[in-house]
Length: 408
Image 1 (cartoon, rainbow, N blue to C red):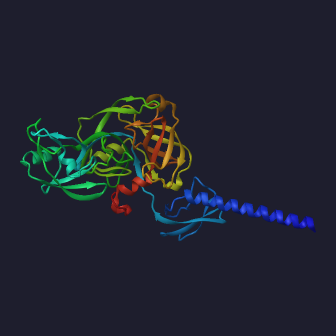
Image 2 (tube, rainbow, N blue to C red):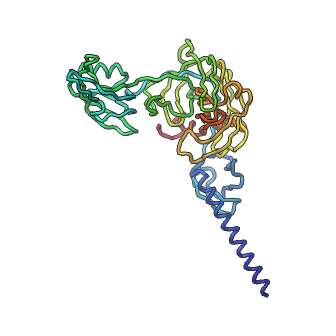
Image 3 (tube, helix red, strand yellow):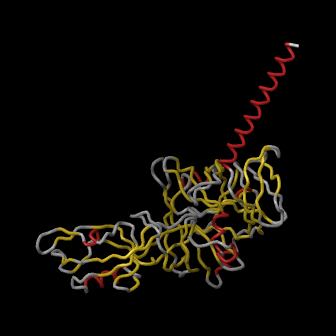
């Protein structure tokens, strides 16, 4: 009788420990699984990275909530499930030149101005301006170039100039009071501004039905301030890669190229936290389609740690396919362009570039026949590794009206 009691208590303790372990595990998964997923119509919702996670119930065929459970027995969390047809895109991988004209002008630096009296003052700082601010208008006139702002300040005669400014998404008004510079002998505001930017990126995918395209996978930011560039208008132009500066530990590599004289093949109209977007010109769709491959979009739950391929260009203007490894998936990343950690494993690409280099951002990633992401960042300490964005995030921006999202 005594032995039976001991065995009963031992079994109860083991069962309690096992249940506690299961619920601890459930908490682990809950913190890592997303709060919402998009599922293709008619497809069973599965999370490739966690096959042990099951969909307990949900309204299949419509948008609803569903409960994810561990082995179909231990509830983990409720999530929102959206139903949608996964679009088919033409994969990119080709480099393209980026020419942007900003919406307003960006303050890239402030400096003191020596006046005739010998005093050193900074009118821009006195007006409350900071590096990274966007000056949208001056004297009520929308700004499109730094020359325009300089002309307004020069002709002011020292009169106060009302400014409309944006900072971190908020707007405010201020007044700039120019001073006469003893050095330049003209009225000045004590600031440097930028109105345009140019560079090289990689095409991620194209929607053949509309001519819309996506590239880069991360926002275009000003090199001095780090702030996202407010896009007024832009052009996508052909580019030829002339050589590749190999990356090394602590030394980022870079694609070197020249803009093709053939003119633009499309316009750029949207700069977001997960890429830049635009519209191809007539005839350009056929040009890209001639050499491209089509893939159905892979949603985030379709991605698993393991082998994949990246389409990118390190010479000429034609993309090649290279092997990579997806090392980590972050469903809840606070940075919209850092959803996966990847590693270049292809010996040919490692030999040519040392891994991920500047200009390769936007290179599409394919896994199990689906377009799942794009390269976005390189680890300076190890250029064979870097970050990638979910292609799903980029697809939400390519046709705003179709996917029902808002510009960021």
